[in-house]
Length: 455
Image 1: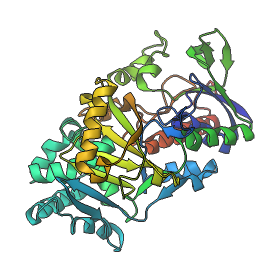
Image 2: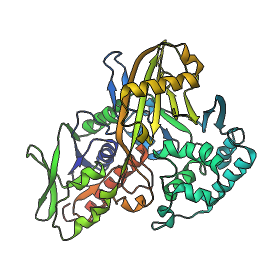
Image 3: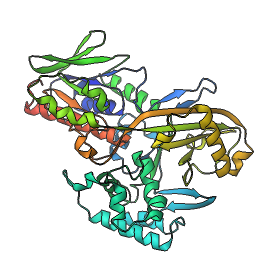
Image 4: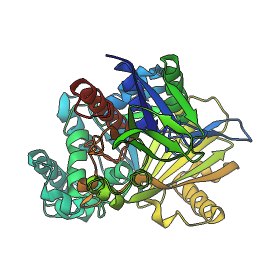
């Protein structure tokens, strides 16, 4: 294949994954990122006081995230992630702990066995859950499926679920996975999630954790790979518009009026940023992009607390009937040997918290930690900080499936990447990688077939 050049707007995971896959296909990528850091919404920063690299929030992946894991392997960073063998985590409710932990059984049976010892749902509730999972397994989803028009909560209640099972099981998984309450997500996405996570292989729902800072893991490692294989990474570049020559995309123009040429352009930025790049008056083609204007986002708030001694004994804990949601022992997860402990509280669907000032959040969550974990009552807090990600993920509300665009667009030479595009996955690092892989695949196909005149 002759050498080609492709310009990629955005240095998040989607853009970097596109670049890696293009390099593997013999094409030179030029990645343009507005910020000084790579990784997009998965980034870390160095704490001035401790010198510690801190993630903006706790990012996890699961065993089913095969393309994300391959991306990490491609950029030479497999030793910087850890994946458990099976699903297994403690759930705290009103001072009582029960585990959702799979047994050593083959395939899907291992995942279903996690319900056996789970005490926050009674026997009748477990039978309801099994019936719900069977209904999910038998449900067929298509492109125009009516399941995208109703909430997962409504669908579950139509399939014998009640307040007990929804609050103590279904939403326990939905809220952190989809960054939204179960009453706000589409049945289509909820069903997809459980088909993959609990009704697949034994390691599908196993939790994976980054062992290094996110900017290092997904950003700097990718930068080294891309640049060592002839690609370019340029940060501090603000792309103003697409450059069109004779009806074809031939590059981009920056806010400094610099023309950066390429034989194709990939937008790997959020939907609202992508639509601003699209020119008008192109024979109705921009109508393809209209749906992206309706993509909405949801916030995540991360509460970071440093204690002078350990207060958590587990690597991570889920909570019910508590604002804590999920609590991560970052010190243990990153294998640090500090005498103290860095705890990260991850708050999904965080509309309630996104506008509250730091001092109020400090009072609320320090009190909740002391209420939930007795050891926190005796510990001293050495540092406290809040990271708010107001547009952390796109919402998978009813109707959202139709708003997710293909990575191949009607504009010749213009492609899309980003977790919000049509990947079959919710807003995750896996979806971002899949979108980049698909964009790169379509570019290579169009080069080979000559379907896009700009290539």
